Amino acid sequence: MTSVRIFAVEDDLIHQENLRMTLDELGYELIGLESSAESALKRLPALKPDLFILDIQLSGKQDGIDLAHQINASWPSPIIYVTSFQDAQTYHRAQTTQPFAYLSKPLNPISLQSSIESALQHYAYQEETKPSVWGSDVFLHGSFFVKVGKKLIKFTSSEVRWIEVSGNRYCKVVSGDRQAHVRASLTEVQQKLAPDPFLRVHRSYLINPHFIEAIHEAEQWVSVDGQQIPIGKTYREDFFRSIRRL
Image (tube, rainbow, N blue to C red; front, side, top):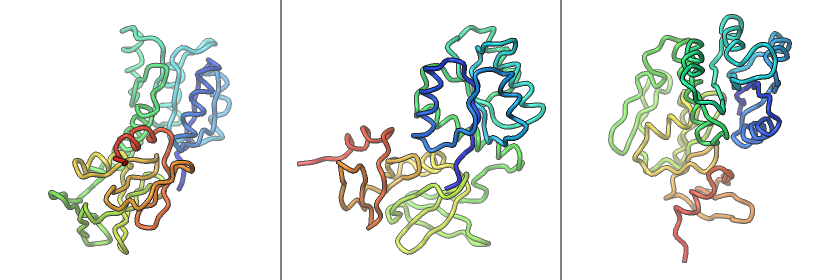
């Protein structure tokens, strides 16, 4: 899997470490973490981030909003703001840079992941000027179609074993001996397939609970139709709450 490359600017050491650990757990690649706009600008010409996470209040002459204006001009990529401040003036000033999200500290991992994936999908939509990242995929109750070459291939939701991230902004649908790739984030796939009973157990996996064969609590993985799939820390509590045991 190709990781999403993220550049972050945060001047608080505690929030820096929290952001570093959260991004690592969610499977993103943190290619740069600076504490000021000035130090970030020195590194950016050599990097190609997929997305920026910027603290608004920074030490130095420039804040995160000033930095965002320069990013938009020279290295256009999605921007997500994080802040401890909620005043209207700062919010309206930040909106002039057209950010994709505005998150409060401390960061919630699920909110951060959802914001990152939504930002990347929306940015890809803008770049490619397509009406939808799902194109001509057609959905029916209990089934869906995925475009494979020039054909629309039907998948029955109840027969899909799992869906996994397969490369940057792609997912692989696995149904027995059949597979297909969809250009969408895993979060979007999950939303599109609701209310079909898929469970998110990891940043990279949705599983069909009907095909669970065994769960290894100590090593934190689940066997689905012979495939060993990890259970991520972020999703562990909800997953074990959803199963019944005697």
